[in-house]
Each structure stands twice: as C-alpha cells, then as structure tokens.
Length: 81
Length: 148
Image 1: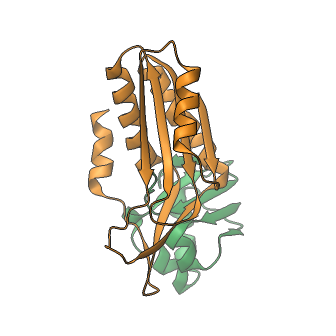
Image 2 (image 1 turned 90 degrees about the vertical axis):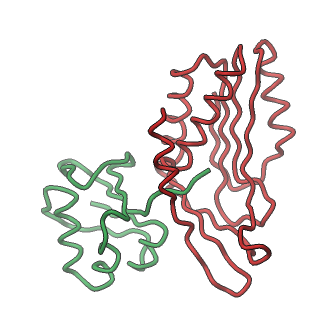
C-alpha cells in the first residue's frame, strides 16, 4: 500500500510517500511495524494523540482495519481556515 | 455550490460580487475571509500552506454539502489556497446565501469551524530569523465542532 506523510510527520520521516508491503490488520498494527523500522519512524509515531490518519483519503482512526485499503496518510491535526 | 482549492490569489471583491449577483434572489449574503496574520509582530516572512491533494477537494465539498443540507441555503462558496503566502494575503474565503441572515451567518461559522479542523491543510510560519514553525492546532478549534 502507499503511505503518505504530511507536515512535520513528512519532515521527520524524510519522504512524502512510500510504498510498503505490510500484513498489519489495523492502522495501529501498521504503526507498530513502522516504529520498529528506524528511529525516524519511532520519532514520528512517538505520540499517536498528536497524529491523525486518513484511509483512502477519508479521515479514520487508529483502530480501523486496513483490509482493502490502498492509501494510508499520517499527519498532524489539521490547521486550515 | 462551488469549492476551489488553488494556489493562485483570488480577488475578494470580484468573488463576493459574483456570488451576490448569482444569488440576487436571496435575502442575505455572508462572507468571511481569512488573511495571513503576522502574530509575531514583524517576524513573519511567509506562511506555507501544505495540503493533501487527493483528499482536499472532496473534504471541502463534503463540508460545504453538509452546510447546504443543514441550513436553508441557496448557495455556498469555499475558496482555499495553498502554497507560499505573504503576510496580508488572503488565505481563504467562504460565502453563504440564504433567505434570512441567521442561516447565512450560522452556516458560514460552521464552514469555518470545519475548515479549521477537518480540511487537510497544514500551515507553517517562516520567520525572519530563518526559523520555521508548524502552526499547532488549538484545543478550542476541536471544541468548536461540538456545538454543531
């Protein structure tokens, strides 16, 4: 699946998007997989309360299943307007 | 109803006038415009607005449609920019048209509250000393949604 990062999450991880093969069942499981990869992921995902997630471009939550999902995006709380 | 996500500047007067003309049977038009503010009193060089291209238009359209469904509106307009903006530039605007002012005002506030916290934009302040700060969301912005 494609993983996208925005704002300071993108800066901490160092890339705007990447393709990842994962067998994680939920978003939280995917986060756990990413955290163990490298320090930059652990830093970006240190505090999930500071993060939001969208699945296939719809806001979702960390308990949500990944079944059939093609695009996961992680970002801080939005600051539009 | 029209939603635009754009890098280009927009002319507030032109947009407001066109919206008013297109809705000249409505009794009330409300517009709101957000402007890049130098909160740091002279230290802000630019505001960089990042967004999620695949999601932004749909999120704004959903927000605008829910305002149309919830209030008695004849029309609604949302324009939101991204990219690098200078202090004083217009970031975004909303306009609502209805028979009575209450619907137009409330729907405009609803649009603003949701644009702040549910539209995938992120603001970064570029300061004169070279520092770059992501603007943090405020608890009160999230709390504001609970009134709807």
